[in-house]
Structures are given as C-alpha cells and as structure tokens.
Length: 232
Image (tube, rainbow, N blue to C red):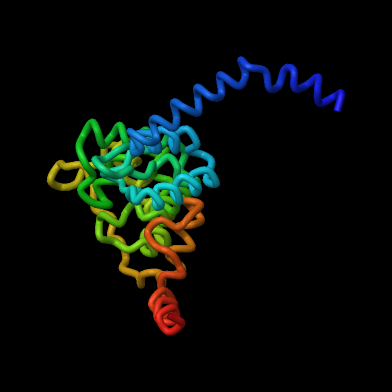
C-alpha cells in the first residue's frame, strides 16, 4: 500500500486527471458533432494497426456510417470523408506501402482518373506496379470498378509486372513501329473464373484485417432468421 500510495501522489494528481478529462471532452465532442471527420482522422492515425481499424469499423457499423471499399479512382492514401461516408484508405491495405499509394494518388490528381487496367499500368511507376502491391490491391477490391474479377488480376500479377517492365524498356530504348509511334500494346487480361464468395472474403480479410464488403455468415442469415421465427 505504501508503494502504491507514493505512486498515486504523482500518477493520479489533479493536473494529470485534468489533462485527460480535457482530451476526453474534446474527442467526445468531435465524435458527437463531427463523427465522419472524427473517424476518418482517427483511422488515419492508426492506419497501420488493423486491430484498431477493425474496432473503428464495428463502431461505424453501429452508428450506421458507411465505410466504402477501397477504389483506385475514389480512395486516397489516407482515410477521407465523402459526404456521409468514409472512403477506405489505399495506404491501409497490407503489403502496399503508404508512399507507393501517395505516388498513385499524385498521378491520378495530375492526369485524371484511370480509365481501365491498362491505363493504370501505363501511368504508374515501379513503386506501384509490383507483384505484392498488385495482389494486395486485387484482394482488397481496388480493381472492382474496372469490372474485372479479383482472381484474374491476382493470378496474373507477375505477367502485369513483366508487361510493365517491357513497356518501360521499350520507351527507354525509344523503339518505334512502322508508323513511327512508340510501341505501347495493351496488356490482355485472360478471363478467369471468379473466386467463390467465401474465398473472396477470406482474401479481403487478409489484406484489410476485417470483412468489409460482406461476411461469411451472411449466407446463413435467412436460415437463422427462420429458426428465430419458429421459436417465437
């Protein structure tokens, strides 16, 4: 008791308590009156902590605030507000790196939205076009807006990187075709069967740390609801 008593003189003194009370009041005020901005800032602060992001996501669900999935043309490197929703941060996806997503964001702001997968490949640099980043972005659903399935991009990530390197080498060597134009053929993504719903969610979970676009137990909801009705 004597040891704890000495610590209490400092650890729980009035100035310490007053400072924490002030911070508690300020954050409570922001969460109450500016919840979207508050959560976007808080999630950006813990952008590399998936456990914390998962807790924030659960609270957003409770408050009925939408957390939009990541998209190459909609999301930024950090969490951003978008009217009554929050845009998921590209920099929060595992294996991509915040700096590479800043490069992607800068390119998009400078030259406009990416039109399709080929436009994305041709305009981004090596920090973005690498196997791990392509795989992570595909698992997180960042390519969904291009109407291509995640499995195709994930399985052909190595081929995309090879194409990008070849394209850069051709540009560096100033190779021309017979019409005196730099050779920039398109990358042809081979069509593949989409992942099963449960597997797609599992890959999404690996990259985000929680389920965002759905939940594996949703397929059992109808059966669960019918059992509840029978009980009552």
